Length: 438
Image 1 (cartoon, rainbow, N blue to C red):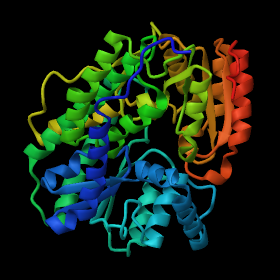
Image 2 (image 1 turned 120 degrees about the vertical axis):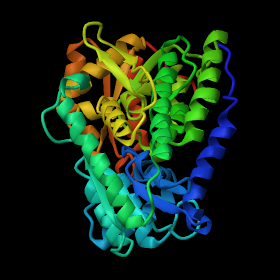
Image 3 (image 1 turned 180 degrees about the vertical axis):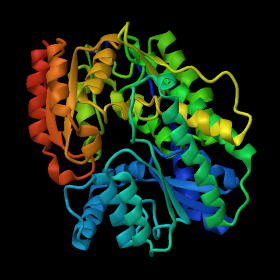
């Protein structure tokens, strides 16, 4: 029975158009005399944009997720990767991406578009090796540059306490600009870079503000819809169209939904969150939750992969990190701003200790008024799943009700829908909910 009014997002079609245009631009870049760049969704994607307005990206993680959503296509890509000799227990996104190159099939039609160079970052054990192999699979003549963000002493959520680390990353960004000029033969434009860097901080700040609105009861957004919206930060944080979409379209509409009491799930009775990537081929599990009157308000992953936050330890709360006081005025300033900004990324923190992830999930669970937490024992991502059993214990110790299920974000062979739904049934009944009638 409906408790709240609901309606579709008005900006949904625009979101689809922007996403389709992004992948088409990468495909058609050479027809326009432009450059193609491949790299991680976590890369400092503003930096290559100083090479010109005709630089177009593809980022491996959202591309791998798109492949996984198309189960027959993903099966072909995964088989090709394994037949080539890569191990099945590697990152599932990475295997889908490599399989797309090996079969020479672009997930959005036609041949796979060869990149002019790869520009990535390295914190997960897969990232730099991902693109080293991708460059070799594309013929061995694709240059690669990787920014290290994982070395050295680290203090989570306290960038002003480790200026040396900010400079360490910023210096790599500066060095990479000289490298890009050499491998492309282009002259770098600092003004284009500064504008792109500002779009980066603008989009990641605005996304955090959007996620804050899901503290409202009823929640204006559900996690399945959030996956289609957070993706712009993973595609290209520095894209002006994406930053404008967040700021001028999505944020005002979600604010309006809050003011009018528009719910994502009209029969919202309980609220949960997840932790990391979902099984992309089985997003129906979120619609299954909705039948019970359960809304998943998001996750540490959707909030913190490309949203920028500060963690208030005294209050055990997250707040969106405020924008810098002004735009940078030079190449050096822009590199320092980006390094400082991104080193406070929530999803970086728990590479150093599972306790940081537990703290962050506890803060979200309390401040977004949740009834339970769902952890995906995700075999497809070693980086974001490391320490997950410790997270379960830590959250239980803090008084939360926790459900775990096993799966794989990008390989459907490691997900059992009936088994997972059965685990959901038991967990949701423990929250005092009644199983819906068929």
